[in-house]
Image (cartoon, rainbow, N blue to C red; front, top):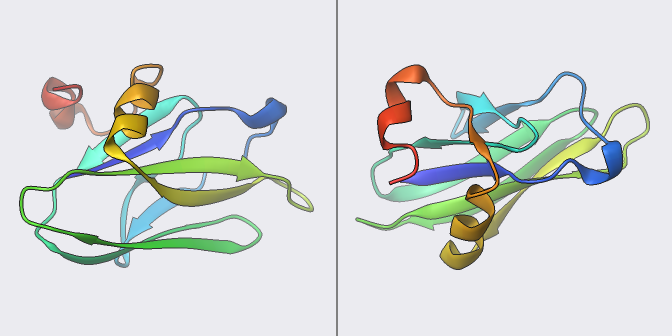
Length: 114
């Protein structure tokens, strides 16, 4: 399971529009300020990509039964904020997700904060 978290709106910066989150070439959601979503995937090697003016990536391995947390931060860009993915520890992910709203697909909402 992979949780994608965008916990903060960095000093009023927001990308415009919110960038798509791509996991191994498949669009799985958007990096929305103060939001989170999740996807359930098989074990394997993964690359998370976001792009605004530039493309940012984070790579990780997902083991069987493991839950990973990707935080999306916003940094300064020339025209819009750059959104970058960062793998964080479970404790950090669980803490930050509590301040976020679910932004995934409606059929996922039931299990969103289990």
